[in-house]
Amino acid sequence: MPDQYLTDAQALRQQLIDWRRDFHRHPELGFQEHRSAGIISGRLRALGYRVQTGIAKTGVVGLMEGKQPDPVVMARFDMDALPITEENETDYASQNPGVMHACGHDGHMAMGLGVATLMAQRRDELWGTFKIVFQPGEEGMNGAELMVSEGVLKNPRPDVFLATHVWNNKPAGTVDVTPGAVMAAAEKWDCVVQGKGGHGAAPEQTTDPIVATAQIVTALQTIVSRNVDPLETAVVSVGSLHGGDAFNVIPPQVELNGTIRTFNPQIRELVLRRMGEIIEGVARACGAQIDLKITPLTPAVVNDVETAGVVRAAAEAVVGAENVTTDERTMGSEDAAFFMREVPGCYFFLGSANPERGLDAPHHNPRFDFDEAVLPIGVAILMRTLAHYLLDSKAAE
Ligand SMILES: [Zn+2]
Ligand SMILES: [Zn+2]
Image (cartoon, rainbow, N blue to C red):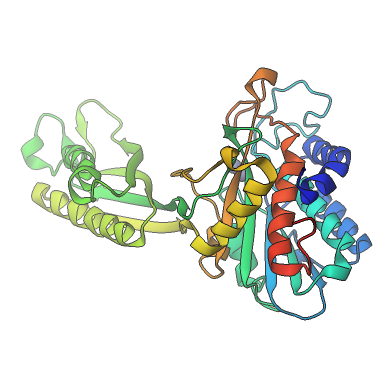
């Protein structure tokens, strides 16, 4: 017997596809999601949600209250597109030149509206409070952080957080629910190595920042290979390196920057500390000065073990246990972490690739597209999870 929540979501299938394609045709960059937010807030109001707009510029929050206030479960869907020119030639391709839903957030908005619709249909069964959040500016803009600072986690404070991402790294029909860390903490680092410039033929009169920088880049490689526990994970990358303009001149300074990715907060502390010690120490050995700035971008996305267990059971009911994995992790980052460091939750991956139909380009690629058949699956998993926390009866269980 098919899962009741999947049956309900399948009944919305065409509507989900229509919503998704409409959002896909009209992609909007982070914090400019005015059209998308307008459609969403209008829909939520029509469904009877108490709606707040303009949070973190273009964010939308809907509240639906049941027979008692607790528990409060928050589901979050991101809305922004990317500055990419779409190369797909579908009839729903982007009509906004240079902007494209190349990450699947169009599908997230459609699933959000689907969940909002099905929760409204079950309003009589609602026991706690359902908080549905449509977030702007996920793509490197930390819209989630801005939403938190504007009070999205207050009035009422959620007890559980849920989010999902369509995921072309996995086939459609599969789902991954991994307990613990699933996406990495990210920092950006910038460094200036200051020496003393001079004639390329008279190095003894200079402090050569190029030689110092070359040793710094090499020495940084020992953080991951020699300092981090081999069973842990970390990335230290140099992303840009600039110094000098002429072949016969030793420049006064070199500028370099890069990124650091970690899952475990202790490993993160270790990497940050060693980064400073190595750059400082090597520069001093070369007689150069350094100015190092490490900017935290996003914390790690860490799934609460208990919540992940509930989502996993829901996923198994919807797609079958054989189609649920528990080992997907990526060094990419995701600003849902700003919600998840305050509220226990689960962020799961909704497999969405269909290579036979050519729907398997990677995320952020100009040919990205995904199998829309997964939209009802995502809705059903979220609904079944919400039912666990918020609905009287988990229908047909
Ligand atoms: Zn993305
Ligand atoms: Zn994304």
